[in-house]
Length: 100
Image 1: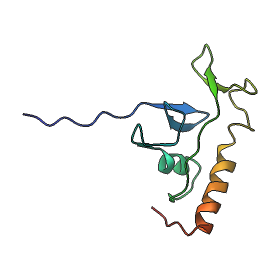
Image 2: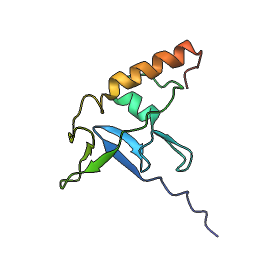
Image 3: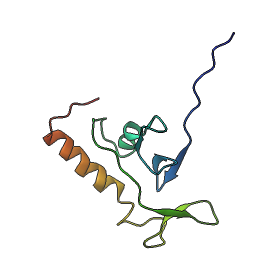
């Protein structure tokens, strides 16, 4: 009997960052961890940091996610990923977490 590979978790992209379908960057339910890829997108080395949870969003008729609060697909308040990642990386370093 042939071995079958585990199914790849479904992901969504919100303003260039990857999340699981639960809007989480790290999700135990999906066995998904997008931190390394998301950090690399902004030129960061991987680090063991907390994950981002995307704010509530809706899908436009073009299939693009937009924040519910401001109805914007490129909302800098809700989707300021680089700033959020930078803060999480700083907190991880202060907490003494190691690089992956």
